[in-house]
Image (cartoon, rainbow, N blue to C red; front, side, top):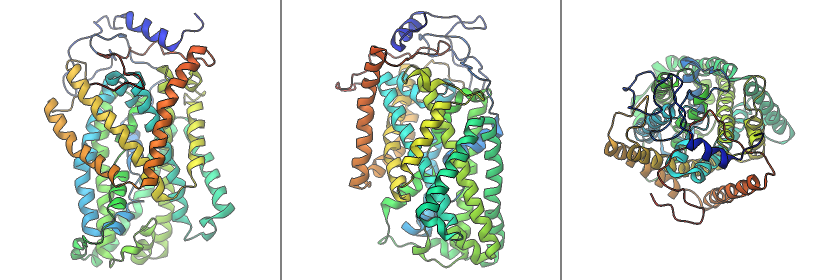
Length: 508
């Protein structure tokens, strides 16, 4: 038929058990850890075997993928200055040593397991939908997309903060507005041209952005005073700013999951890329932090956005400052294109799952999600007037809610589907996985508890919009005012229970 509603298609797909293309069964034992698995078979007992969906040829290999992950999470040390201003050198250094263990490694491990288990562009949306039902999968998609767009609105702010010391006109008014519009248009065009362009742009920008820190580190060696790293004043710590800065700089490892459908051999490539990216990110933070705090006398009030450029001038002169400012600009360009890629492919993946109108699945002639890119760019422009601290706090709040759903889904899939094919499996039992997530969950509670009332109210309002938006879209689908459809190549979403309705308690 020319039109099948998303619900009808999903029911039909759950009933029709298609054999795997290689002639094997649709279910079976999970491959050994690290074993290549090119077939996407879905969950045991679920529907839809067959090959992984491939609406366009997978274009991401491991090196571009590492740099895209690097830019989705970090992009370099630009933006970590507030951690020193909020808490001093010792707590800043300790935070960037401890938080990767508490947060980054667990999130990367979950992304490796579930991203290879569900190699499709809906990413964490289908993780939650498989464990808790499509309604909560939609909520996950709404919160994480909005969080990503808010996060992306930060990069024009950081870009201009680093340049305004050399070009004061960019501090406000029409020149700043024009710069934001022009930058957004240019980087949106890069995303439109395809992930291959994005990947190689990320590599080039990453090398250029990190080189001045390497040079600054060598120059600083004669001036290093290790005792400066130990300075701390526990009575003068802005814990809210400190935790939000650390958290913002070390999260979003799961963003790469919304590009899983575009990765060559995700079963092997994704876990390796995440492993190397974790090391890359942590070293990329600690090296400049040790250099800046160890070589320059501490003035915490100076440690705000853009201060690394001032340190570069003190240590190496104006030429190094200009290089640092250019590197910051390039880094923000890399973070922007990487984040926009994940956000726009997520919308495409949700449309292929029937959660959004079918026009969101439209691809350009370069295979990129045309409508998703336009929606994400529009959101960035609307939010780019917010301040740095407001942006970080708001996106962290929404991100925390999404991660709680993600943690719960990860554990539930381990309990309910222990034999599901997992090309990569976190080398821990279910109890070990729960223990791994306890510190990360405590961190989420701390970040939420320290949020200001304004940020909490705005963020909860955004969550409430998602709770209403999903039933509205279902009503639109029922009335056939917009076309919804499910990609027939995707496995069915297999759950063991009926999803809770919006007004019913979620019982797991």
